[in-house]
Amino acid sequence: MKKLNAFFIVAALAAMLIAPQFLKNYGVYLLSYWLIFIIATMGLNLTVGYAGQKSLGHAAFLGIGAYTVALMLKAGFSFWLGLPLAAVLCFVVGLALGFPALRVQTIYLAFATLGFNTAIWLVMRNEEWLTGGTFGINNVARPSLFGISLEGNRPYYYLVLAVAVLLAIALWGLLRSPWGKAFTALRDNPIRAESLGISVRGYTLLSFAIGAAYAGVAGGLFASLVQFIEPAPFTVAASIMMYLMVVVGGPGYFWGPVLGAAVGVVLPEWLRDVPGVSDWYLPLFGAAVVLLMVWLPDGLLSIPDRIRARRESREASVARAAMAQKVGVVQ
Image 1 (cartoon, rainbow, N blue to C red):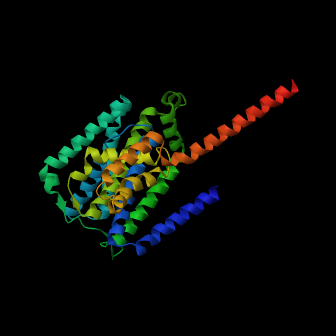
Image 2 (cartoon, rainbow, N blue to C red; image 1 turned 180 degrees about the vertical axis):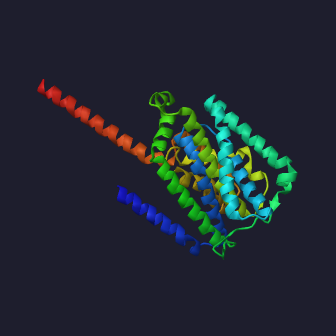
Image 3 (cartoon, one colour; image 1 turned 30 degrees about the vertical axis):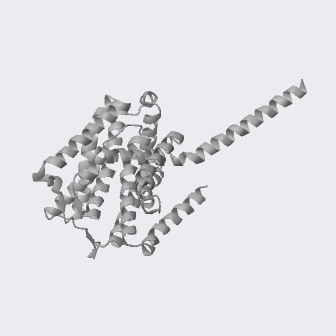
């Protein structure tokens, strides 16, 4: 099974490497956009899917990362300084946002994070001296690496892909470490986790901080991808969409963000170009997401587990029936 998984991972990476050679410019841009949201929702999946916290403020961190990189570039600093700064800044702000989770949970925590997103968006919208307000910040440059310009969509795509792979490897290692086990214990039973010596306070804060840092990196990459930053992409609606990406893909599944971001980013674009569907693609997309959440509350990646559970239940029922029949014959 491990060899099969490794084969699929290598095949997927190979496909991602060669895909830009067969796509037009916009297709490459869309792939980069998808990868950026994979990075952002990897962080949200850690907070929501693994640590079991409710967060509706993730777009705020995406915006903080984007504005950090844009402002650093505007001030004459390097992209390679702005990107890690965005991650560190979001880590610190995420750490602060984690404190309400120590006092409130479920829907109350969701409202607290929603309020945080609204407050950050208002700063982006109204503090024109810093963010440019609705006029935004334009001409956000793309970086160069070892003297090679990443200005075009294809070179920049490979940068985003490299960052996504590195962050995925880092998250994979984290989730298989004692920290990862502590996060899942926190999600499944906080009281039992605390009785086992796990610091509920510490791991709750870390889940928000690390998730926010991933969104900060995604935001920095987003700024140079679109090359124009203004408040509209960082509203509460964007946070809800990212939350839906996690839920649709499968919260607590490592590959959930890949599938969820595809549903949230690529599927609407595909529906928009389907003949006869283009006028109705948004209602259709919304209906598809609602149906998925109703019929598959654990996400698309829960389908194999559901099939396996039904098969095992069926086999157990057959075994019980055979045992009962055998006992009846003996009697």
